Image 1: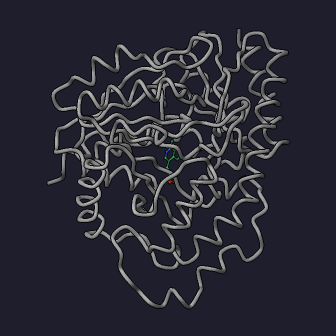
Image 2 (image 1 turned 180 degrees about the vertical axis):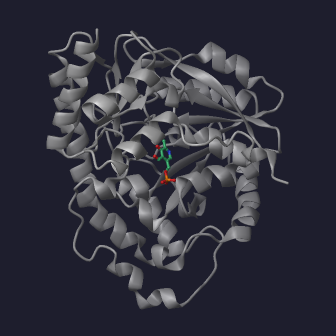
Length: 389
Ligand SMILES: Cc1ncc(COP(=O)(O)O)c(C=O)c1O
């Protein structure tokens, strides 16, 4: 009766079951998987959501790409990041996840493939599956920094049914960013094989190391869609607004925009109130963004300082984003370690295999939790790993 897109839908994993059990027993959990900024103790400006009640929203004027006024605000905000894009090359979406889905419809027939980095964000697998697109990986390898295997990417880009290369920069969870040279090399590959680039830049505001993550839009060789949204830029995942900015050869951009218009017109999924409010959200959201920036930088420093006293644990360098990766000894499986950490130390942390790390053992730590919770959780984690040997 049901679509095969959902054939791999599994029940809750063992970690989710153990968490449920612990919570039901009323036991404390130090959550190092936190990814929701609205639950991380940041101070949101009073009345921040009041602009949603603006009377201008009473008038509905459906626009496939979103209201011009809102798209202008988004183009201006991209300029803040040094990304120059004209309003007519912006498209509003309900979220970044929805932007992926619209792009898969634009670029792929059922059974076509896209290439995405490994390790990376697990939702990509579900998003491709839900659009009947297959997912193939190219590897990021850690050699002091996470490097792209260009030869592998080049070989995979030749695949007959490959339609696009997904880049996630800053990447979740490695915190790595593509250099200008890497972006140019990927764009050359995409151009050679008539592939589009989908560049997920949702974490671009959160540099931890010096410098700023380059946008894939800095090149014009390949048709490129750069994705962002309020969920990360203003810490507002609940208001549901994402966007894409499109660049590349003019003819291809025009063709893509014409087709995207048809797709977006079928859904018209972005609400009018959020479009009317986006200017206020981005200006008020600046203070939230600054708090998140400070939090993730401070927690990353805290993590490296605490780990320095535990030679069995190595914190891999993070360039940007909300997550860090801790390499631990490979004494038992990652799954066993995260279950033990939860049961015995009350610390909830994601194992590397959730993100398709090539080998074990890695733990992924969110840098969002409040400093005292973060420090206690990290200390408990490090002590547990140290004692486990
Ligand atoms: C790399 C990456 N892209 C996209 C998203 C989803 O963003 P949105 O809430 O705009 O759908 C996330 C959420 O964590 C993410 O980590």
